[in-house]
Length: 212
Image (cartoon, rainbow, N blue to C red; front, side, top):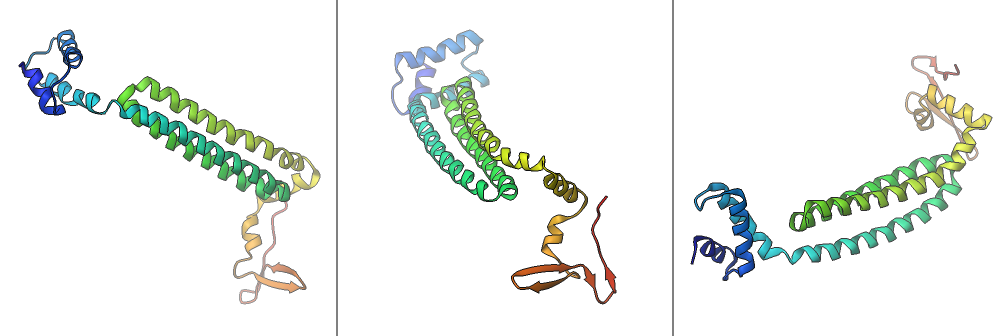
């Protein structure tokens, strides 16, 4: 029994087949390694993993396909819910829903790419890259398609006089702070309406907002 036969037997826990031994000898002869070459020893040590775990690649592939199908159903459901929400509240719903969908699409693409990367360690980097690219394109296209449909009404509203004025006002002022009405601003209620009064009684100072 050669040194290669002994090493493979110890690594895989059984006698190696003729094909398995021939594969290692082809690598050794093509690269000109000797029996005591350190690089040859590393190739032999790592190469036995393909013998032991090559069947796992198919299982990973099956699970990847199932995972992609599950995520597609989830994204389709999310898209339908997002479209209904956008119709009820144009500006805020467009911004929030589109951001969430894009983030979900990115996480989905990243998770599926990671699964394909693991499979690629066993069956080849080229196949892994191809599948991961398809998954990312699918997730990205879905997010883009939903965002495009959702952004239409908001873009049309921004072309109106009120939309243009609101956009210009938001660019010059901290609109979120004005809506929160933080101290020292005061609040005043009339019926169901709440008003923010920009006045500090201690400093006797009144604030306004920028208009140009």
